[in-house]
Amino acid sequence: MKSPSLFSFVGRIFRKVLEKQNPVSKKVFLSFMAVSLFFFAATNSNTSQFLQTTFSGNVEKAYAQEYGYGYSYIYFSDVPSSLTVQAGSPSGVTVYYVKPTATLYYDGQYAGQPSVSCIPASGSFFPVGSNLVTCSAYNMFTAEYEEVSFRVNVLYSDQTAPVITLSGSSAITVAAGSVYTDAGATATDNIDGNITARISVTGAVNTATPGVYVLTYRVSDNAGNAATPVTRTITVTDQGAPVITLSGSSAITVAAGSVYTDAGQLPSLLLLQPVLQIQKLQLSLSQEAHH
Ligand SMILES: [Ca+2]
Image (spheres, rainbow, N blue to C red):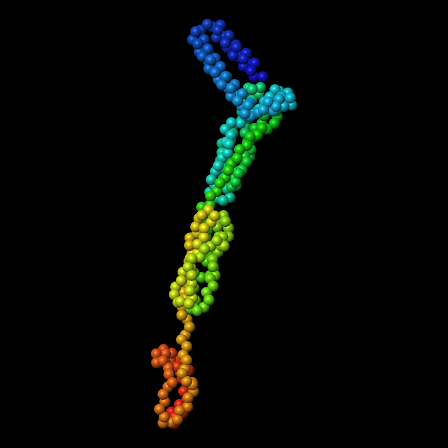
């Protein structure tokens, strides 16, 4: 027991000081005693507070009965109610924290500061979510570890925008009058994964009218990060060659000496399409054969 030896030690000093009758050392000693008493009272009031908050009377009794030492307990100080940490990555973050301090009490007296070990330790990687940290210290009087725990809440806010990938070419040329079917695009996000279904497309292609059409693809992730818009340019061109329709028969026989008047052909088309003209105007002019 510490207290009796401490008291006898103090008593001896007290006696010695009084025996010497030195007024200066007496004064110093009495001041020391006053300060000591004040701290003793303060510590005692703290101790009783600890008892009320950390242990119920039944637990104390159980300790005393089981181990026969009187009661002994560990008080953990500097225990955070919870820690909240922002992670820079969706998997989690390495968290450093200050371990709680353990103070061992025996019969209401300070009896040392056992070392504290916590799991997961400070400096461990904590996944996103609520993580329980359990710290323990050894009580040499009860031969048991006493524990205290707190939570480390790891939050992650997604700040990475999704990415849109076009399916097919970004520049397409289609024939006027054809049916245009867009190949679409896909979108992936670092957290939400495949969000292709959420892509919105603005713009439209009218294949009836030649021109340049632009389709714009947009998407956002659950956190509201918008992807860089992706566009596709669709050029609708008039690719059909004009069709010439002959007026009258493609083979005509006329009498020699008669005047031939063609049934009709657009002069401009004849100039533009000489090959077609040759193919289509195979007139058998028997009269010419005679010349
Ligand atoms: Ca994201």
